[in-house]
Figure 1 (spheres, rainbow, N blue to C red):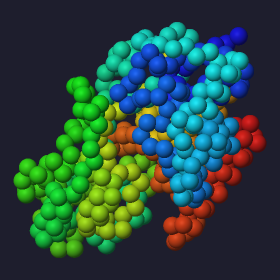
Figure 2 (tube, one colour):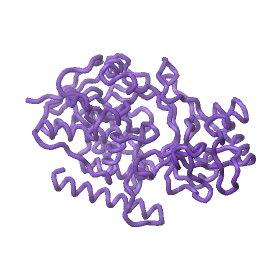
Figure 3 (cartoon, rainbow, N blue to C red):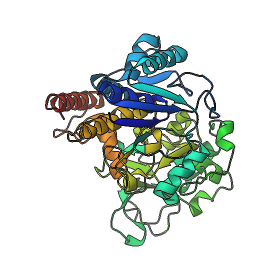
Figure 4 (cartoon, one colour):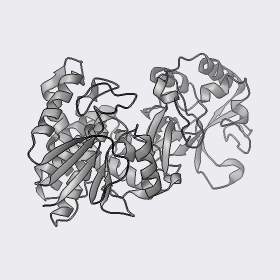
Length: 437
């Protein structure tokens, strides 16, 4: 009988193992705990939640709520665990972490087609493999992956700038242009006068930063495109940002006909043109502070943030160069990846990618065509992002409404729009499931 090796028993690895086993495929699930722990992990159980006991919003018209509902309809083990371990948390799905882990551990270990093998995997094994080792992949396995895909395609630090929706920008203040007219209107520009710049600068240098964990600071990690936080650059001097990412040279504000005092540039983040990245704004500010301070930028007063900036240890692939939409390695189709190592960001996103990778592999092994989830489902949209990436360079992405295709009709209210997007997503998923995908 066909056998698949799954490396890593976090949420992605357990979901992948469960889906494969439920499809009648034998699974060898490798987990280095309890023989070896990462600096973040403490509990002996599988699918350990280490950062938060919240699995984000419950409401269906939120990106997280929509993704969780899609996962339920795809038979998610994590969602089963969440139901039996939930604790009160208002509008969020929060769980007792140990109970959540214990439920999944029991289900995985008692499944007749899953064998859990304890110990670290240092080399990619032969045969069909799903690698789901997460953002803290061990050094030895990282070297093996590095050898497989090439060092230029594996990153070891996540220094990401915030992302905002295109429709939330104030187009009366923001203008499209590239410096010196090169490249057409590839960027959107938020011009600042001196007063606006100094007010922004003073709030930025006094804003509250998030603490870095010890394991983030240990070791010499490769930095992706530089990781100087914008607030650290600002603290070097009042004009440092104006000679760096906020330099106004080569740009003319069409409202004044003059060069601005400073300019914050926005770069297209997805191929659909619905999201923009704040160029050079890698940051370690707390999320609330990012919303408060960055909303001071002209044109961003009402900006809707789909992702806040982050800086932490994160092993992930340059997936658009390496993986297809089914999370399969293009250069070696016996190997799949799942979880945060693919560039999805978050617990539920990682778990969902494990379901998708395993569904695809299971159908291949049974001689059936691989599934392709519709792009207007949240999981399908995440998979598309992993496959196609961003025109500005690949960075990890969590579930958000901005990655879904636009609706054919214009809906003014955000709540009503999100409800319509959610209805469309679930209808598309049901149609795909009914049609056998």
